[in-house]
Picture (cartoon, helix red, strand yellow):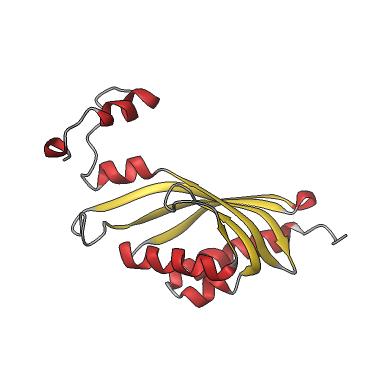
Length: 164
């Protein structure tokens, strides 16, 4: 059984993680991942990705649709005994070229590090606010006082001609 990770390791990993993403260098991001990583970001991607090479397509797609996206650390929360950490970040940049290249967004999210093997991230979960990002880019309408699911359900009743 591997030794528990330290708070120092988890905080350092979070720093290196954000630096790799801000480098916009796919190889720097992949270098932090275990070859058998389990990657879950079903906000952006269509399903769970298994393996480092599967993550490559995901990372390169992000650079393609948001070439100037950047991430600032807000706070890293650690659980060394469990070998887990959560990196709360602010992401910002311009909209995708095909969608809203002149519009900007600034939202918050979390990179959740669920497991490590051999000093590399082996299990990952992403959570972030894509609906707010889309509102800021002018693709989704204002909430107009609607809360939670009521807002999302209101989007189903919009015709393509009214799709902002």
